[in-house]
Structure formats: C-alpha cells, structure tokens
Length: 253
Image (cartoon, one colour):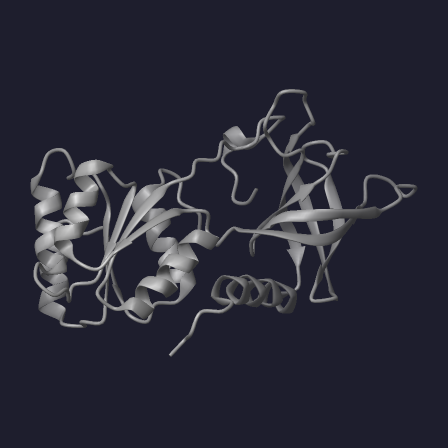
C-alpha cells in the first residue's frame, strides 16, 4: 500500500473501498480510454454518452464520482453539472469536467457551478489521478498506486539476513506493498531490488505498516514500505512503468 496515513501503522492495512465512477462522453474513444484507466485504478465504471442517460443512472444509484465532457448531443455537460449541483440528493457528488473545449469563460462558469476540477483533453494519467484523489479522498494521494505482481528481493535487518524472492503487489513512485508471509517490523529500514522488465531497480525503504496472515481476515499479508533512498533515474523508470501499464492497449491519438 502506498502513501499510508498514520492509521496505517501496525498490523492494520488501510481499508480498501471499490468506488463507482460514472463517465459521460459522446466520444467513444475517450469513453474507452478513460474507462480503461479508471478500471486499472480499481474503480467500477459505468459509461453513458448523454446527460439524460447520466441522470437516469444517477437516479438509480448514486456514483462516488462523475466525469463528463462538456460537448454532448442534447443536454451539455455544463447543464448536467448544474442539474447535479442544484439537486440536494446529488449535490455532494464530485463532478470533474474532462473536455476538448478549452474556452476560459466556459471553465470559469464550470468552476462557479461547482465542478471539482476542469481538465483539458488529452490529460496525462497522473493529472487525472490527482484530480480524482483531490475530489474524492479526505487524504488524497499524490502518486498513482498500481496493482501489479513484480519479483522483489528484500534484505537489511542484519548482516546475516538472507534475502529471498517475494512480490510487489502495489507500486507507486513513493513506495511499495510487498506480498509476504514474513512482514518485517514497523520502522525497519530495508534494502530491496525490484525487477521491472528484467531490469533491477534498487531502493531503500522503511516499513510503515505490516499485515500478518490471520485466519478469517480477508486482507493480503505483507508490508507497506515507503522509499527513503532511490536514484532519480530509478524513480523515473518506475513512473514510466506505471504509466505504461495504465495506458497499455489504449490509443493515444
């Protein structure tokens, strides 16, 4: 787990919550691209191509987040935003405008109407992630957290400590969660070597919380680790790997 809060120390991992995001866009390619990114960030995603359909979906089940284009066939994204913010039942839902329209006055109108963020297409995945975090989380993360499965060798408790292969199950530019049945003590500073596309990335990290394997507890055993020493080139390699995984198979033009 990455970017832990103080409550993440000890034997309790941060609770996970699968959130439901509603995407509204008349451009099929953009619906596909943004929807795939959100799914890879562990959102449940529902997509529609009109404001009218969006309101029907919202009436049936309130989403945790709405991302809408301004340019829609009938009801515009701005009209949809105003409808949502004027209804007491939906006004608390964060709405992010994600649009090909770059008009400054339109942006000012959207912000005055209560949008959580105004993003101009095409938006970088990191900017989209940070906007979503700011809109939906009380303690927003700065770095994308990616679910993955990468070999890692961890050592460093003592000169006689023998490293062996474990697995990184969550990765960010700031830290990792190592899936292991042998989590090390909180505050231990360890050396680790992660394999990215068969290239070794060496880091030092501190254990900020650990999760022991407990019968009946549906949480992944392991330890959350925050980087304390990493080369800038290795951090860039991690960043590029994360973006590459998020954008895999998604057309960029």
